[in-house]
Length: 257
Image (cartoon, rainbow, N blue to C red):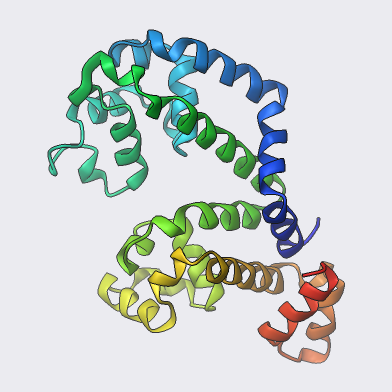
């Protein structure tokens, strides 16, 4: 298996082309065609949940594929909308549900929601990106985490936003070599620890974000794949600790950047 660093670097450098290739894959193309041709016919929550292909497509687009079976649960979220801060979706403490209900806001817009451009290309783009991440994750879960962090981290506004997302937290913990036991600590203590290490505002800077993700990739590979990585093995021999900055420099030289 290729290293997380090399795979992430290759994908990120050719992201537009990779997404175009993903969209042309037979299953993706077929499901996208069905969605685009039929989403406009959906006029109610009943229609939406009742059309399994449409519903599953939308759920996967928002990273909720594993919840596609829970139609009663999702119906409750859709019926409550997002305007009320105490609505079901808002109380789930998971931005994916809020984003899903905001896009398919039948509670506020009724049948007009599927006439909006918001449920068309943006949803298709999300579906294609999710498909890419899931596909890469089948070979290396860390690549999926890296791509997810690249996509989702810029939307985070606070340390608590990071901690609310298990996948984002996992990346941060790996980058800074934080112990697994940290997750059982008081949430405010976790937040203070991360605030000392990371400026959340840096996540909106593409260059700083990319550097952080590459640090994650190197750290993950060092912790999990040293035995199969010739470069990292050089630093593992004789018990010497790996210098992250040095190993990243060598990785960059190897991959031309």
